Structures are given as structure tokens and as C-alpha cells.
Length: 213
Image (tube, rainbow, N blue to C red; front, side, top):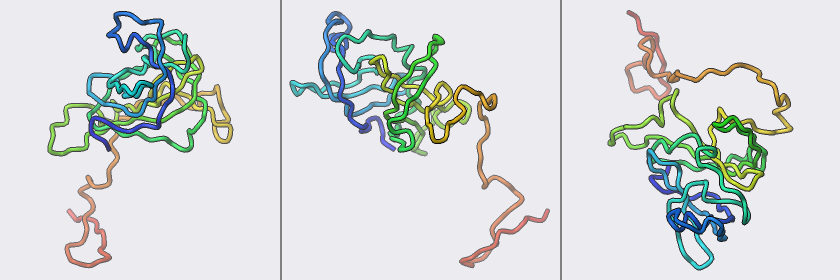
């Protein structure tokens, strides 16, 4: 798991000029770029790092800065994302099952968007020597973020509970809600039960014994 910065599968796209001009002007300008990395800062959205055609490198642009071609209407960042980064420790995974699959998500405004899966961001607290000030490992608070290239030319980052994946081989009951899912609050572990203990010896194939009260 990377700390602060991580490589991502490269994305060739355009960056909006206003994000290169501190939102002062250039809202009608678009520049080819190559996104190559992500930065995770708690209390800020995932921020992306990219290379431009003049060799310029730019750090910390939100997902709303990018589009697949010139002239795409910019969308509010709140419509494209729900959550900030949960930790400095970020993982980037491109799940093979999801590769090139279509995803539909429901935005906070209640609008549905269709797009193509790119990769997934996830977070954890990976240093026991640091205070765990966040919620990245709380079962009822944790969220991952699937990065999606939208059919409308923008990009989005959405958690599991806002997404439906189109997989013709397995997800054959599209449009149905098989069960009303509840937020998980359980921590599953097998090392917290006083009923069981390993036998007290140096046997290689040790037994697990029931503790007698």
C-alpha cells in the first residue's frame, strides 16, 4: 500500500484550462495530458498528477479537471464524487473481472450515469506506530472508489453502494434488487474467542483445544 502517492493505469485525456489557471480564466481551453498518478490526502478528494505535451508536470487536480475530448461540459465535483480520501495510505487495483465493463451509478442529485470501469482506489491505516485518526478501517464507514470514464466524456469516482456493474456472464438479473442490503457493522475475526486456545507445547502440528472453565 502506497503512502501519499501511487501509480495508476495511465489515462490519456484532456485537462481543462481553468484548473491550470487557479479557476481565474481559460474555462474554454483544453490540453492533452497523460494522468499517471494519484495523491491521497485526508479531507480532500483523490488528486491526480499528470504530464502535458510541453513536458510540464502538474500535481493535485481533482477528477472534474479531466475529460475525454475538447468541449465536454464540466460537471460539479459533488456530482462526480461522494467522499474525500480516507487515509494517506492508498491502494490502486485494476480488477480483471471489471476490465472494460460498463458501470452505472446514481449521483447525489439522483441522476444516473453510464460509463466504463478503469480502476479502483482503496484506503487503510497501515502504520501501527501512528495514531489512527480516520475511518478507513471502520466497517460501517469505509468506502472504496471506482474510477469510471463516463459516456458523457467526464470521469467519476464512486463507491460500491452507488454502482451497478454490467456483466452478461453473471449479473443476469439487472434491474432487480435481490435483497435490501444493510450497512455492515461487524468485524469478523477468529482470534477473539476465549473458548479456544492452542495447546501449550512445541508440537509442529499443534492442536486447538477447548478451554475448560
